[in-house]
Length: 151
Length: 151
Image 1 (cartoon, each protein chain N blue to C red):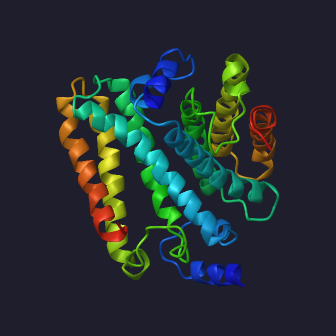
Image 2 (cartoon, rainbow over the protein chains, first blue to last red; image 1 turned 135 degrees about the vertical axis):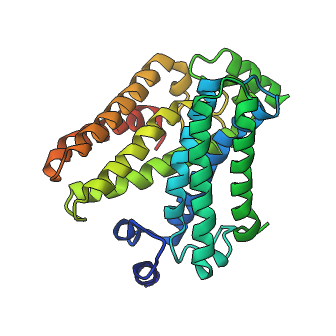
């Protein structure tokens, strides 16, 4: 019943691309997947942050690798907010679905800044050259965390 | 103390590339990250499996997208087995670290087959053309699950 309801909701979702596959999964599985996506994002943002803050030596290849993973995950993230996955062990705010246009905007911003960071890092031989774009990515992250995530 | 110990262990790890960053994290955080990686992998393997089994219509672009994410995650996975992260809420077997060469071999196999699947899918206009390589990826997954993961 719950599954059928989720499938029905997903059918009308404007966010979700891979509706058919997702229609077969339970909300709690979507939430696990979503948390997984953000675990992977966080893991790779952290060393970039440490380099930018001078807590770790700047390693361009490693910075690019981290940025590429975050960029790919930024394209995965929107798929992790399947309608109906707002209940349970999650900090996702209902506004993600009630304000779908606003949420799409911050998600698009995340993708744009993450993609730019890869490009910038590929030619950045010093940490000073990535600092600005890393900051822009941080702002894009914050735009979502501040408005669409519970404390 | 625990953190210092982990850092010491990591220092001698042959597996880990990004040692400096990982040295600052707790084993339980490594485990969370590792589970996140496999959540992302599983989420994207499933629709490919459904297409191969005929449970979902074959969609080449979507198949390629899923395969690309799995391929990238196959390069991330080895970083998620930081030495010292064998205790806690994990099914990782001690053999991952005691048989590092064997584990590297199955991880390399995973990367090779996942990478090949992307290449195959890019030119596969029918599901029959991806079935064989998807099976090869499944075998590569199993090689690790059977030997390095507890039931």
